[in-house]
Amino acid sequence: MHHLAGHKNIVTIKGAYEDSLYVHIVMELCSGGELFDRIIQRGHYSERKAAELTKIIVGVVEACHSLGVMHRDLKPENFLLVNKDDDFSLKAIDFGLSVFFKPGQVFTDVVGSPYYVAPEVLLKHYGPEADVWTAGVILYILLSGVPPFWAETQQGIFDAVLKGHIDFDTDPWPLISASSKDLIRKMLCSQPSERLTAHEVLCHPWICENGVAPDRALDTAVLSRLKQFSAMNKLKKMALRVIAESLSEEEIAGLREMFKAMDTDNSGAITFDELKAGLRRYGSTLKDTEIRDLMDAADVDNSGTIDYGEFIAATVHLNKLEREEHLIAAFQYFDKDGSGYITVDE
Image (cartoon, rainbow, N blue to C red; front, top):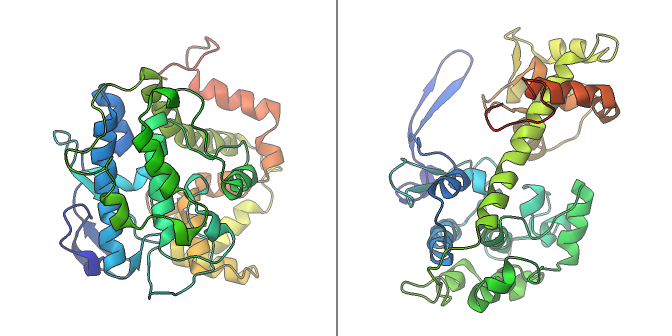
């Protein structure tokens, strides 16, 4: 991240402090919340606004690529606002999967998040073009409120990504400009060699200063979908944790001992190094990047460690989590007044 220091839309490191157990990294404070949350709060939202946001996001990609850095995990959650007053005070965060690359270098490890991963990443033969694909997915979501490649399972999402069909027929796409759809097609081109570079995206008429992106408000359904999509993963992880914490000792037999074995300093939480060492002891051959993915997925409260409840939620077999009685219990946890519905406040 020091390599990228100075870019106005990349979070800065203020300092690093080491004690006997940890290295504490002090980052620039971004108190304005996540990108999608801001869009939802503002209400009025147009193609021009989406174009301005896309320009910032792709500008970060261009800056990274010009310095030989591939981000590899771009997604809306990794763009925070510095403050609540400036819609464009965006900062890219989470460079945990980023790597340096040389022209023509090929990468083979599968990283990233399912909705945003490029087809060549799934095929284990990719380069920096994958970041442009991911930015194209974000743009599609900004304009429609849903990801372009969607399925009920992770494998289904991957199959849709590899198939590469982009839906421009259903609402709200008939009301969206042809120029934006042209840009999305060129960013989501399945052939990396034919995909636009980050610089070419920034030169597209829809993106350019005083470009052709219209300023009329988008359908309110887009905002509604954005809100649902943003909240979905958070609610799902919380529900899994609620279920995991209600399981009987018999149902989690062995997992408690596994947690204790990994938590070598008896802190009540598993660090990345403890998870890595523990997995090695259990015979795992996962790469560091794959272990980091596991860590991030399990760390629901973003504390940087995995506590006992998070560990159980992440490791207990899904057939236990998906039993009807457990799902009902999780629903009732959120449905405080027993109305049969989960309200916004709940």
